[in-house]
Image 1 (cartoon, helix red, strand yellow):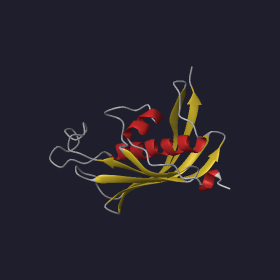
Image 2 (tube, rainbow, N blue to C red; image 1 turned 180 degrees about the vertical axis):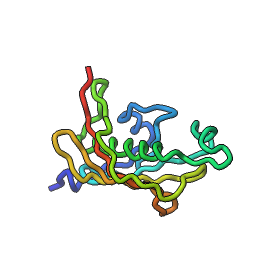
Image 3 (cartoon, helix red, strand yellow; image 1 turned 30 degrees about the vertical axis):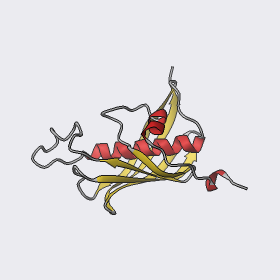
Image 4 (cartoon, rainbow, N blue to C red; image 1 turned 135 degrees about the horizontal axis):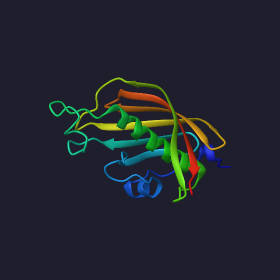
Amino acid sequence: MNTQSEKTVPAMDIHAIIECLPHRYPFLLVDRVLSVEPGKSIVALKNVTINEPFFPGHYPHHPVMPGVLIIEAMAQVAALLSFQTMEKNPDEKSVYYFAGIDGARFKRPVTPGDQLIIKVELTRSMRGVYKFKAKAEVDGQLAAEAELMCTVKTVA
């Protein structure tokens, strides 16, 4: 019998991603989901280009992706895992919020031309609150990591 923990879901292209996430340019920071196992883990990518709107103002002489945006990209990937785990897409009355960020560490700069591979593992889910371990890598090297806590709330 195929249980939810054994089920894998096909990769998601940008069209499937924008069906799940409310973010749009310039704040959508996920280009593709490579693999997802609902209730367990997800792997996604963000292609970092010189055309990103933050590069002209974030060290123009040596462009570096801001760490807070790397964390945001990890949170967006975590949201995708949550929605796949719940087996439903959010609607206009639900918002996915950060509830906490612990142990954030930045190990290497992310620069134009890098492909950020984001790996998120669901470590706990209870009463609509999700905890994750997240890592962002470039060329197999750890760029950033953090433990994230997120929740889905209904808004009026």
